[in-house]
Figure 1 (cartoon, each protein chain N blue to C red):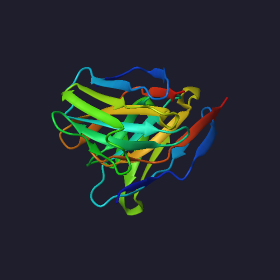
Figure 2: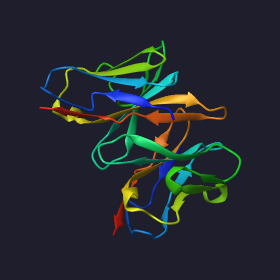
Figure 3: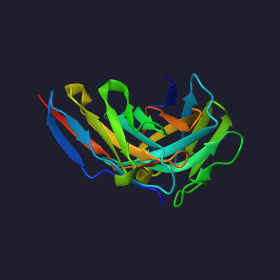
Figure 4: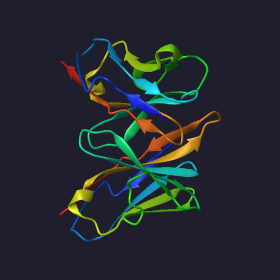
Length: 117
Length: 110
């Protein structure tokens, strides 16, 4: 099956630093990748949709200057949380989309737990 | 706008008992429907999907779901639950613009 690797799985950083999270599709090419944020005991909230070679589309209320997304290739997208603050602490999950003839399937990474001190 | 409702926040069943998790959706066109499972601290694993065709879809781990257009529902079922099924279950609708329900936490009693 399709495998999506997300790295790192856990990161602890000081307030004001930037953190980069990588999302790779290992055995398929993903023209579209998605970034979600999940608060404890809550559902996934879509942050942005990223297409290879173009600018990401951000959901309403998501600061594009705060959450920088780069989708440099068909297998790699990165999310950089710039100048992280404690309120950015959360579980971030990426997914990679692949077309199955009649619709897109999203395969998810294992997530990144970000803790900002 | 599309949306997904999972009415049950938490369900507890005994091991070996049957399971049904409810999902209702609102979508403007023919929906793409999914069920995902999430173990604590992990990403989401796709259990099954519905795009078109047979309204009863089979998934992994013995799960199945039935699409009922008249009821705007896509309930997940399993005839006999195993302790390893304890997890959070998310129903989702959409395609590139996927929206998730709030999730149902499943606890399995021995």
